[in-house]
Amino acid sequence: MTVVISTSEMLKPESVSLHPLGAAAAAVPEMLCIFGTGDLGRSLGLRLLQSGYRVVYGSRRPHSCGPLPQGSQVMSHEAAAQSASLIFICVHREHYGFLETMAPHLAGKVLVDLSNNLKKGIYPEPNAAYLQRLVPGAAVVKGLNTLSAWALQNGLLAGKQVYLCGNSAEAKRAVAEMSTKLGLTVLDKGSLSAAGELEDFPLQLFPEWRLPLRVAVGLTAFFFFYLVIRDVVYTYVEQDKDISYRIMVSLANKVFPIVSLIMLALCYLPGGIAAFLQLYRGTKYRRFPDWLDRWMLCRKQMGLIALGLAFLHVIHTFMTPTRYSVRHTLITLVVDEMKNNKTTQFYFDNTEAWGQDSFYALGILGFFLYVLLGLTSLPSVGGSLSWREFNFIQVRAQLDMLYSHV
Ligand SMILES: NC(=O)C1=CN([C@@H]2O[C@H](COP(=O)(O)OP(=O)(O)OC[C@H]3O[C@@H](n4cnc5c(N)ncnc54)[C@H](OP(=O)(O)O)[C@@H]3O)[C@@H](O)[C@H]2O)C=CC1
Ligand SMILES: [Fe+3]
Image (cartoon, rainbow, N blue to C red; front, side, top):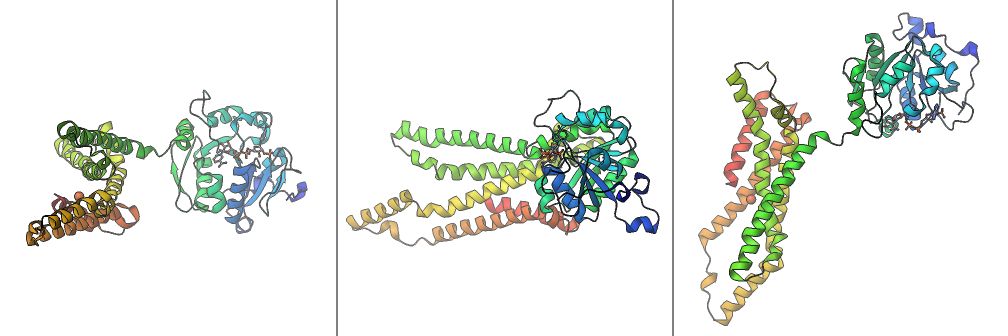
């Protein structure tokens, strides 16, 4: 939809105050400008309109730029810039050149740089610093670049954390106010020199999962090869028996609980080390060493991996009696007994029955406590417990689970 606006209808920049003081000004929704009518521009415009703002697009081709959110206006870059004091730059960095030529029109404006790069280190300076160099008279704010057009389009913003940085406190405040109105939680990352860090965020793939996953894969590989050699290869060499089929279930079912318990220990160990370190240093106001910091930051992920492996262990254990090899062994035993007309193997051993049932009962209890630990670690659940309640469940569940399993 294209709405061409006459100059008289356009709001003059003086009247577009970011902090409307008068009641009259408050009645007119604030006008925000978006440069670029691509994916991000359109989704952001839609969200802003739904949050009660008015939106004007600045485009190279205002008359043929395709469908835009209903209620928005579209003009040339210059005209659009005049009607708002906050401008979102939804254009790729490669095309920033045109902003330099229109720098006089942008003096005194707040420019929000949302751009991302495809790879780290393609450009010598961050996109936002480049933009500030092209338009020195404007206040550049880097931020919101971790949002996606998809999330904006679908309104998946509530409580999502976004980062901002910029040299002008006033400009940052204006962008932060707007972001809060969209339902976002804003974290100020300081001056524009943090822009590079912000531009790297979207390029990271689950950063807090990397270390726990590496540890889990490393441990799994180690125990797997150890058990293959100890159980399969050794049996083959010593007894000339091929039991390699056991790799799939029996062996895996030995690896899962081992790695799971180690991961669980690794999840709670750094908390203990940190507490000892604080006692040793006599203060809690000194930074932990880097390795401990990194370890502490991925505790939740370690715990979740431990829970996942425990879950696999449960499924494998319940599946054991249904396996061909187990059924074959049992049937062979029965047939042998019948052939020899003996029933020595098949008297009912009460102790054995007690043993197995207790084994399963404790296993189920252990797994239940594991899940309880996992659930209380979720922020939404943990947040509803008092510190004492949280501590009680965490400590008790850990101890009981270890006892029940060992
Ligand atoms: N898509 C996403 O999910 C996200 C994108 N971003 C960032 O937002 C920016 C835009 O992304 P996106 O909307 O996906 O890209 P698109 O390619 O969809 O849109 C870019 C827009 O820029 C304008 N443009 C293109 N070439 C030029 C030029 N030479 N001079 C001036 N304007 C030009 C066009 O608008 P017009 O024709 O109206 O001038 C075009 O629609 C990028 O920097 C990207 O990194 C950041 C976070 C998420
Ligand atoms: Fe077990």
